Amino acid sequence: MARTLIHIPPQVRRGEVFEVRTTIAHPMETGYRVNDGGQTVPRDIIRRLSCQLDGKTVFSAELHPAVAANPYVAFFVRAEASGTLTFRWEGDNGFAQTQTVALNLVA
Image (cartoon, rainbow, N blue to C red; front, side, top):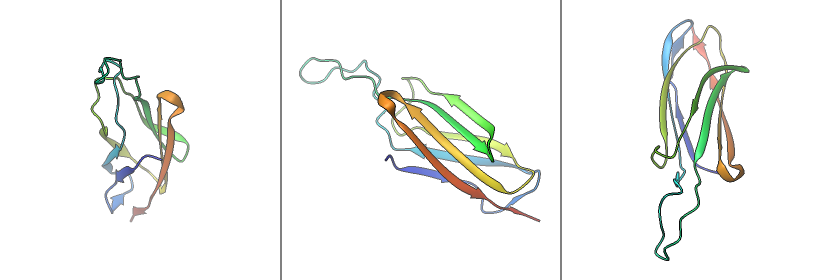
């Protein structure tokens, strides 16, 4: 399981736009690099990140080999009610990881 970091503001008001920041520990091997033995290192990248708020997709992105190792992604969301943010990363070689974060709106 890869290490993930997800940051949302500690206080979010109903209808307020807020920033979500995520990063995941992953080598993001492009498939173009050659090792010391002269052989190409196989591609191993995260291809997709999606975020859902209570089952509704609020953000998704396709990632490509040009993305650096340990990809950092930030985006903005507006929530009308408290709920659960579900993050899912999918990649090569069957890589898939899901992380959830509770979103509690303040009055």
